[in-house]
Length: 102
Image (cartoon, rainbow, N blue to C red):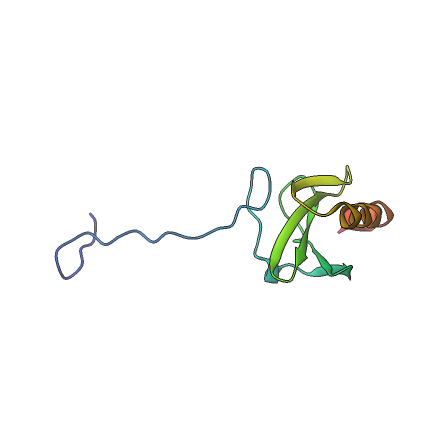
């Protein structure tokens, strides 16, 4: 039986706002993710034990720019300028074993 407010109307349902970050699923907010590295004005963050495929997020300030697939070392979602993208992908290849172990 639905609950009614004082006016006798059924209250509106609460809508939770969740930001879509990856191809098919949802991720935690940027501030809930530990910081992995910081260079070129970019911050790499990763939510451990998150959904598949293994990935991390690239932020500039509070703005999420991209998601990077760790296994394939490629851009999943978003955009980065070419020099920054090459630097992030190179960093991913160098630290791939550590990232997959997390």
